[in-house]
Length: 135
Image 1 (cartoon, rainbow, N blue to C red):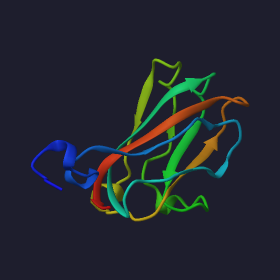
Image 2 (cartoon, rainbow, N blue to C red; image 1 turned 180 degrees about the vertical axis):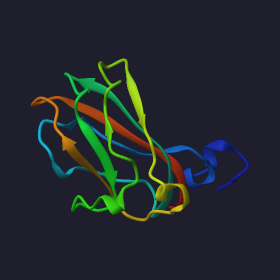
Image 3 (tube, rainbow, N blue to C red; image 1 turned 90 degrees about the vertical axis):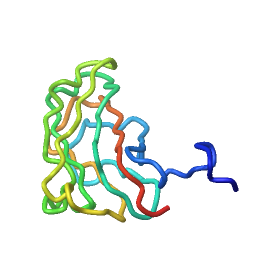
Image 4 (cartoon, helix red, strand yellow; image 1 turned 30 degrees about the vertical axis):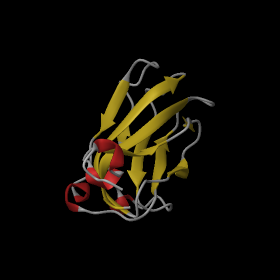
C-alpha cells in the first residue's frame, strides 16, 4: 500500500479520532457497567468524551466513564458529571477527564457507570475521541 495519501492511512496515523461510538445507552437505572464502550485499537489515549443525542430527559442523570466494570471510581477516565446540558437531540456535553486520563495510555474497554438515573427508557449516545497508539 502506498502511504503517501490520506486514504491509505490507518486511525493510528491521525490524532483525535472517534475511538468509540455507541448505540443509545439507557440511563433509567443506576449501576456498574450499564454499557461497554468498545474501542478501536489495542491501546489508545482518551482526549475527549462527548454525550449527545438525548432521548427524553437525562438532565438529572449522573455518569462516569471507568476502565473497570465494578464501579471502582479509582479507575475513572472522566469525573462524575450530571448531564445538565444534554436536554434534547440538539444539545451535547463534554465530560471532564480525570487527572489520571491526562497521562495514561489505556488498553481496556471502557464502561459507563450511572450514579444517578434518568427516567426509564431515556438514553444518550457517548462518543470517545482520542489517539490510537496501537491498532
